[in-house]
Amino acid sequence: MRLAILDCDYLYDNLKQDYISYPHMFIKAFEASNQPISYEVFSAIDRQLPNITHEFDGWVIMGSKFGAYDDYPWIHELKAFIRQLYAAGEKLAGICFGHQIIHQSLGGKVQKAAVGWGVGVHDYQVLQRPQWLTCLAEDVPAHLSIIVSHQDQVVETAPGAHVLAGSTFCPNAICTINDQVFTCQAHPEFTAEYSRILMNIRRTCIGVEKVELAEMSLLKALDSRRVLQWLYQLFIQPRKVA
Image (cartoon, rainbow, N blue to C red; front, side, top):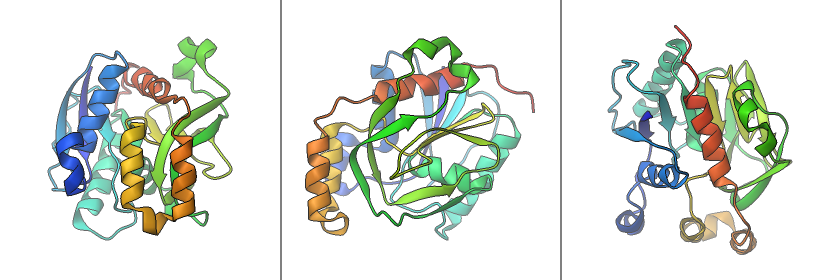
């Protein structure tokens, strides 16, 4: 499998040595899930978007501290690129900011959540499964536990989207669009260690009590590999002809 990964952020300086980048964390997690992968990383935040050549099995848009509604040239360019990918029938996945900007680009709506920051491990109820997960039907659980880090949410999904999993806190947490797009508000690529460090960097703006509760939640078993398996299953499906 060959993936194109779009980088949408720079890590905090004190995290770069150990964690390098969000694409690096995703690749590490994907490989740990025993999925064969080759990849090329493009820096969307540096306005380095490639031509669409159909050489990739899928495109993955990573997280960011920026908002999908922010008025920056690179964000506007990324939105236009997402629409081009979708129109070309390319398989597309988004994580956190990637989840949000895909929906925003394709007709949905993203805004800061009234419930505030989501951090630590959140539990999502699985509501349905797409056709491309039929082969894993016996392995689809009732709930998923995944690490999150966000203050924005998709409040209106893109037309044609189906919500696969959600919660009272985040109703539109995992979605699919026309069996071509898979989006996830959570971070299946995060480790508990990285989550703990990141939320403590933002401790003041998140709130001390919320951070302390979130740190306790990091003791839970995670379903991150399962979510990455779902993403893999989407990417191995035949591409639609544009």
